[in-house]
Image (cartoon, rainbow, N blue to C red; front, side, top):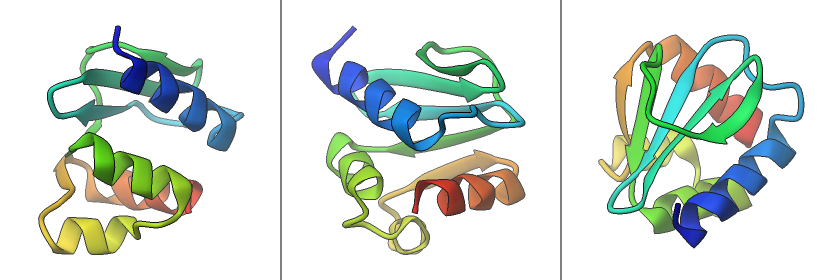
Length: 95
C-alpha cells in the first residue's frame, strides 16, 4: 500500500467517522483504491455502488477543502461511475 493511500484512508476516516450508509470506492490514479462503507474506511478494491476516480492531487484538494468536488467533476478532474446521488452525498460529507 502506498503512502498516498495510507494518508487518504486516514483523512477519509477523520471526515467519515460514522462510515457511509452505502458502499463507495475512491480510485486514486496510479496509487490504488479505498473502500468506504458502514464498517468505515479501508484500502480495498471491492465492488461499490459508486466509484470516484481522480488523481492524487485532486483527492488531496477535495479532502483539504481546496477543491470543490462538484467543480472537479464538471471540469473532468473527478470521474464518477455508478450512483450520482451517492456521489453527491459523499461530496456533501467531505465538504
